[in-house]
Image (cartoon, rainbow, N blue to C red; front, side):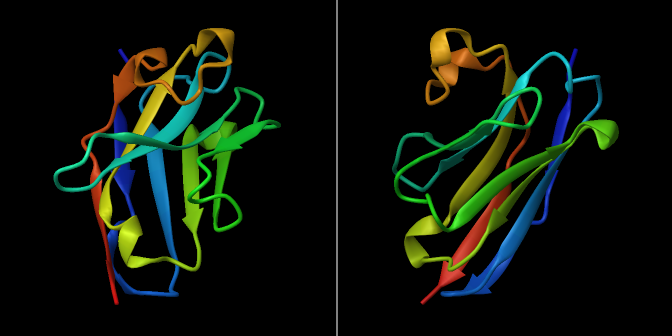
Length: 125
């Protein structure tokens, strides 16, 4: 059973930066694709970013591409989401996730088996 624990959320002004971390309790490095989703109040959970097992390939939602960077440290079993030039519309609970992701369906929630509890990110205007 994989347990995922997010940290690094908080309140930041528009244009600022935050870095989220997700620590895994199990060897995810050789097993799972890691990703981040987010959910704003009244909205469905949406894909943000994903990174392959070897950390070479990354995928982003159009709304964050060029501003957010996903990375992973397999030795530390940790995945990161560096968020720059934050906007008020980035306000949401951010969830870390892990899964096998078959057929390149990185944006689908059903591709992931394990989820963290979420961390709140609030961007003020």
